[in-house]
Image (cartoon, rainbow over all chains, first blue to last red; front, side):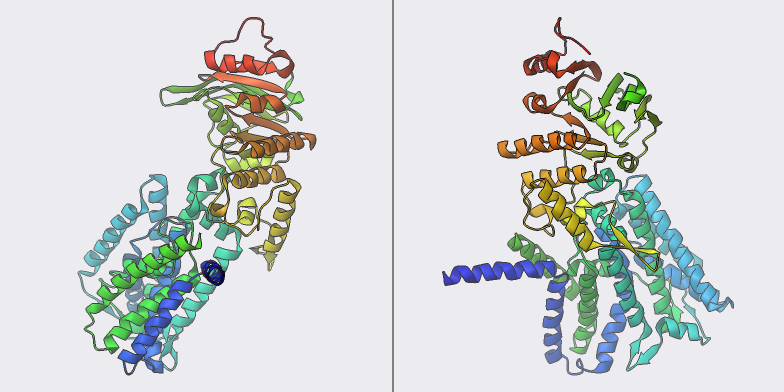
Length: 326
Length: 257
């Protein structure tokens, strides 16, 4: 009797965990935080936390878009290339004396265009977005390398606009953290409280059913491709504002990190389910792994291996939780 | 019957898929407050005809009149806006979304933020969902429940509830009883009759002639993309219709209206 009540309670608990988006990633975050607090002596300082947040924010701006797109059932592997390309456009225009705000807007327009073509190609020719964006990832990276001859660009001037994009404002924390939080809030609101959000979930949940109900599924996907590209471009510009330099390989590998953060946060690869709160915790987790490992004295190379392991464990836990909750 | 006298009139509809002829010169009509049974064996063209009427794809040839006016339906949304509601065979429910969100998908109740940004009015939608499902005698624990956690019958009920709630003029049911228990079937048949009482016309597509026979006023029989005929209920028995579907021929002496 007693044990039955316990198992019932357990089931209810699992049920309510299920309804809390991002709980698993939050739990992982707490565990890792505790571990690193022991293994890395300077982990529990404000600068260390600021470092984590800075890394997480730049990745997170991209991951916001990746989450929206993944919920609607598509992928974008080209985000890293768009990140680097937009940053380079921004940097180059700034160096030839174009006002920074205008250079910034043009860089985002380039990203908009790339996202738009990604979406159109995927939707019009009915090809998997994995392929489309694998192609455009290589295409834009290649164009970027050819254009720059492989050389990076530095920006020597000082500008208020760069501070707005990513200046330090408090104990090592940077403006990118604010942009990231604002974006999470906006995207989360759009996803959960507006008709557009409903269309996104429906498009990813069942394309055919959504279409029969009159939802313009193709347009929803194209819009999400544009959103993810513009956010990647924004993140590129934000990171350029931090380093005041950009090289043509900037953003390489970011596509996979952003997908990893999104999936760790509980978003389904197959679409139709996911949350931005989960992604928020997912990017913090990945940012924490990056600094935590280094501060614990592990060679930086171990970072990728560790993220890989976390990704797999997170997905196993998510899948199990979903099975138990049924 | 003149154009103005029927709710839907489809004239000489043809549709080919590649070299396959799915429909050839089919006329189809639904009167006001009429329940029409659309029957025929697999591949007869029933679903194709319905998909043309619901704007999923256009016909290669032919005309469609709705309430006497010629219409061109380019998307499911346009058909929905006219007052044509469909319960598809696959139900068109999104499994990972809640009952309420499914109910209002594509036509959410919103408040305008700053007169500009549409924001979901979840309370209102929950209220309407609870009420309209209760009206139909549909029993669901919570409208927050996701579709994936419902039984086949409950899912069917939600899909039908949605169509009836919004279905102002014409309700199309594609195999609505296929996956149901006997008790659930009778509920669905009752819902169809109730819809007619409210002034709605119904197209009922099914393999189960006995189900459709018990509620329909008239039958349209298709065979390999060609219409065998329209038959009023008083002129045929259920067995006659089964015979037609099976053989693809109309026995002599049956009155084709």
